[in-house]
Image (cartoon, rainbow, N blue to C red; front, side, top):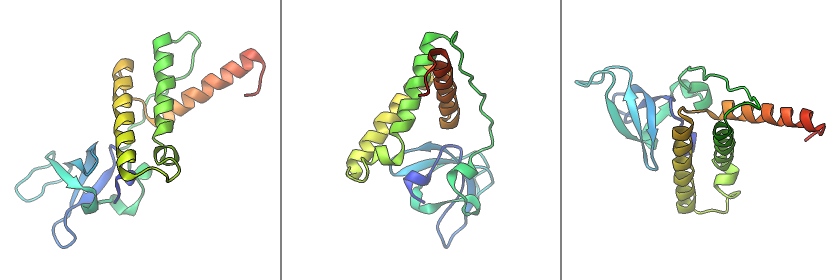
Length: 164
């Protein structure tokens, strides 16, 4: 598995290819390794232990992608309202910008950035995202933020009578 394929809440199997494999959930993503919380016993370690695992020793459960593998938690929808708190609107808009910056083509500058530049950019954007979540008082996943932005754009286009 690669760093780019890993997502928070993703269910993975980890361990050496010729050794015991353990099922776990990714709880933190770092540059070289991820923190994985076990969901089953492994040797003398009980479920719930957190291991620091290199990406090369992890694989998604059933070979599925990270999106299909995410822990099934339905995030609450955040419908756009013109009466929303202004700070909340700004935070949600900024969250959308950060998620956009984390997209592969933007993160890698269409393949022009070095691995060091990509890692630095990713770390900076993830720090911004954590700060915005703290400002908002909750985490917002990318799909929820995108739906909110689309509702806002639709509201604004109806209000101004434009299509864009």
